[in-house]
Image (cartoon, rainbow over all chains, first blue to last red; front, side):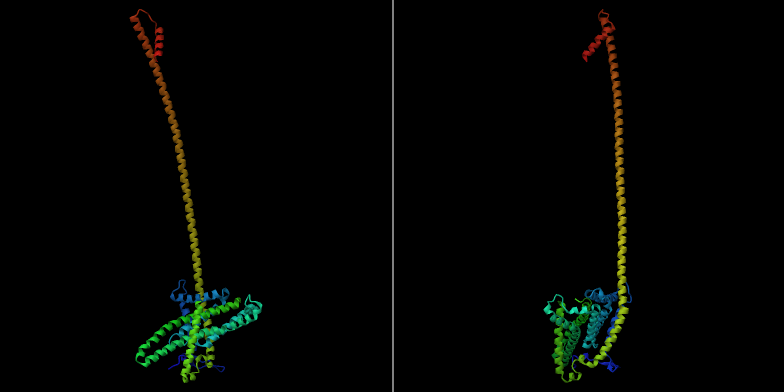
Length: 247
Length: 200
């Protein structure tokens, strides 16, 4: 029987290397390309009419735009405007990676810790640099909670610094673990169904149960795919807000 | 709150799944030893993933920042401009309608007051006319009454005097026929007058 984590295996589709590194075009790369093409292509086709009174597809594209714009506006405010294209790209990339990953036989890009960590770490470095460029050394006052009593300050600063440094880890592990867990569970139930139907007898009829469970779980995973894209986006906005406005 | 609960449940689920994965990996023994546990932890695939993530994300960023975002935001801006200009036009039209209505109201009340004035003056004139006519008629009536009274008085006097003359003549004839007294007209007249006075 196949292991439930085998679905996460990276397979090279076209071998490539750069400066001695293996940068083969893999199944993961294919779905990254698809996520970008499908998301931007869908939005571009949807905005083709560009009419004052939108049709269904245009309405959908505008809803996506306004959804992300509202997240950015309510968490960061007007100063977040220049970062909108990045946040929008991030949201669409994660959302479409998650959603495309739910199609059977496809690959879930965001189930790879290195991918989510790379995104989270880039955001972490980015917002830290934005904070330092905007506030200079004053940025480090972010680690001193306002109104703290003097003797507690060293301890509080330590806690604040650790919680700040842990951000990229929590941000990336949240998305990764959700995708990993969801897809593993789907595979476990699918494997169970296959095993039961192979066992013969009463078990064949009983294999309907894990199949029904898979249907339910797929619905749940659809929700998780949307929710995690939203959570990743909103947390990015909150970190950006911290960098721009400190406390 | 809901967010927190969902996060906690996510963690629980993922923890369960991870333990499930690890136990199944242990149980699988040989087969998982070949693939080396979670494929995510296979460092040899990382450079390729990082490279393609960078490339695809950058391409996505360029497409979305250059093409998608401007097209959507321009449509949204056009719409909000159109809506605000339409509202402006509607407000102007409303103001115009209000002005027209006010002008109509003003002319209406003007006409009303003019009509009321005209009616009042007409009534006053008619009243004055009536009064003057009444006065004239009254005067005429009084005058004709007086004339008639005067005529009546004159006629009465005439009748009275002719009656006197008749009485005097009759008395003279009666006296001359019944008595030998020759009574003069003047004396008789005097007596008649005394009698008339006594009777009246």
